[in-house]
Length: 104
Image (cartoon, rainbow, N blue to C red; front, side, top):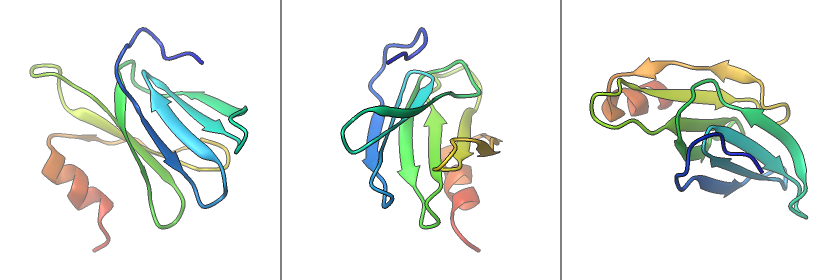
């Protein structure tokens, strides 16, 4: 499976729908329970992504990895069925990320 030009450890999670989601490099893959690729999605920023969460509504949230001086991380929220983008903010810090994700 492609990962772009980024060699970095990613993340993997099992979804309540029975599928497996994995992020590596700048790609997100939805895999069947037999590990066949259901959907492949190139993520919106050409950076290595290393975070992956499944929210209570089932949506997928991932973030890219930035080194000092590379600007703010991008958080991406995707539909678990289609991997279409719901939300792509750039946040200045981790605290802002959690504030944006937690219900008010």
